[in-house]
Image (cartoon, rainbow, N blue to C red):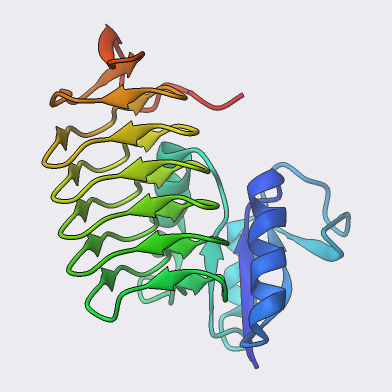
Amino acid sequence: MKNIVIFGAGGHAKVIIDTIEKLKEYKIVGIIDSFKPVSSTVGGYKILGDETILLSLKNEIFGGIVAIGDNWTRKQVVEKVKSIIPNFKFVTIFDPSAVVSKSVVIGDGTVVMAGVVVKCDTKIGEHCIINTKSTVSHDCNLGDYVSCAPGAIIGGNVKIGDCTAIALGTKIIQSINIGEHTVVGAGSIVVKDIDSNVVAYGIPAKIVRSREIGDKYLS
């Protein structure tokens, strides 16, 4: 098995750890986190320190994955890791129960969770989260650092911009365009295009306010 590290020690990291353990392809040597005490444990694995410890680990590990739910924070951590080790290998994780068409293209660092279905000719960018029992239909294009929360359903030919978050149980009809750095609230039904840098929700989903890049949306 290939040695990897996990970046982040929150709830999303626990789910990623569970998925990796089922794969039996990678061995987790520890967790890198700037906020947890060194040698404390999460999911049975020790906190090794912050990102600077990569310099002492780089010859011992194959790569790693950033297991942080917030899209903007995940992006910042990826960029920090690249500043330390420019050619760091970010692994892509597929839960064994996911159903992914052979024509789907998925970028480095993305995780596809349990019960997910991704249909043909879809492209999913780097460092995305396609969470539990969500569905991405045919010919979609999801940018980098996109997250689809559990139960989200995305129709065919949908385009979603970088760092946009689709919340729990949201449904998006076919041929919709959603911009970058946008949040679509839980349980929404999206029947019209949504701009970048906004928060939208409801049935049908409507824009309720603007948002700044990096605004928190997960508690």
